[in-house]
Amino acid sequence: MVGKRLIMMGPPGGGKGTQAKRIQERYNVLQLSTGDMLRAAIAAGSPVGKQAKAVMDAGKLVSDDLLIEMIDKRLDDKDCANGFVLDGFPRTIPQAEGLENLMANKGLKLDAAIEVRVPDEKLLERLTGRYTCAKCGEGYHDKFKLPKAAGVCDVCGGKEFSRRSDDKADTVKTRLKAYHAQTAPLLPFYERKGVLKVVDGDRDIGLVAADLERILGL
Ligand code: ADP
Ligand code: AMP
Image (cartoon, rainbow, N blue to C red; front, side, top):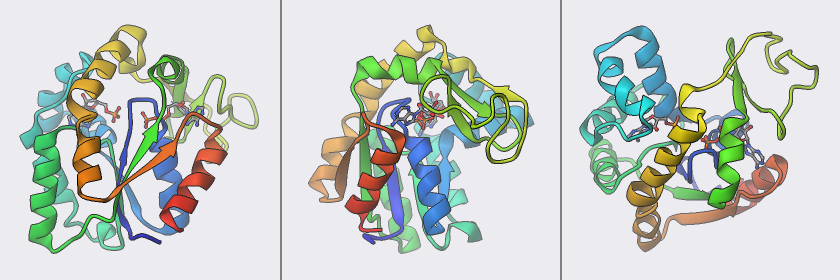
């Protein structure tokens, strides 16, 4: 394997979370989704959540300083010791530079940044059809990933599901703009560092996963 400190990159709805969860389950590394962390902060009513909520609802990016501090603290937790897959972070050049500094301070090396590449025209359908189990968070899709038994979560048997409020068409458009303007410039940034790996994400979930395993040498 190339190593166990990875970044999962790509547009909203590209399949970052889906693939990062698979890597977590199979290779004993922790998936760290900054979107999930921020949604948990909102649900808990914490100061971070209060600061982030309006920005997230608008489909824009939360401040770099807040995100860098959040990841800096989180990587010190014991469950990150065996490795991690960052999902949704970094999303701007200052965040990528912040990550580089904080990892250097911790004596950690980034092993790979993976781009899950999906054309824009596929993303709206991916996002507007997305839902998750309210109990365990397992992800599903109206068309591309249905539970085996209708209305019952494959993983935990839960029967309640939820949809993200920012997966509405209008907000998706703002999120895609933010991706192209602020996050896509990270791809050449990591390419120059020689750690970028590209996977074609415009295929069946299982095929993308298999390709990823091959690319990472898992
Ligand atoms: P991201 O974390 O990049 O925002 P997700 O992993 O949540 O994206 O995927 C978005 C939606 O698309 C989910 O409903 C997921 O089930 C579905 N999905 C993920 N990968 C694929 C794929 N390769 N083909 C079709 N649908 C997919
Ligand atoms: P995600 O779950 O990755 O789709 O993120 C949902 C939302 O959380 C984004 O649209 C942003 O508003 C916010 N967010 C998540 N990660 C970051 C980040 N690294 N930088 C800034 N905002 C973020």
